[in-house]
Image (cartoon, rainbow, N blue to C red; front, side, top):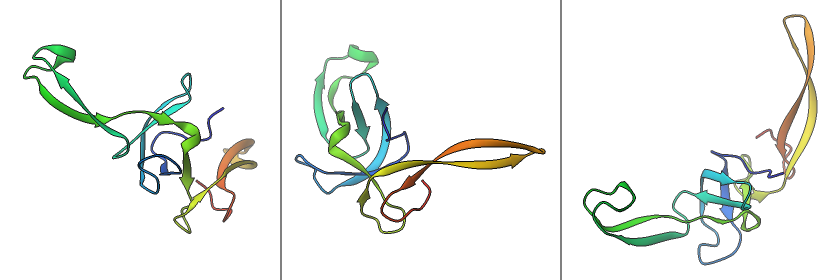
Length: 111
């Protein structure tokens, strides 16, 4: 189970883009990979009409990186942290419901 979700702010821990922070654009759980905005940028040379590209040319985009090479950024400190889960009881319309909440282990703040 991946603890990193879409739209999380993450920091790259290893590789050529180490230290960069960005928002998760896509999570691929089957491959254990994530696509992070502005990280691991690649250039592809496309012919006209290839992959729905009408003009062709050089297209720059983000490539996926392994999920173990990124960590969620703590909202309080701005540093990478581990993610934990805790169960909280929430009362709605007179009913009590147990909800799993993600939190940053370093500061204890909810994500």
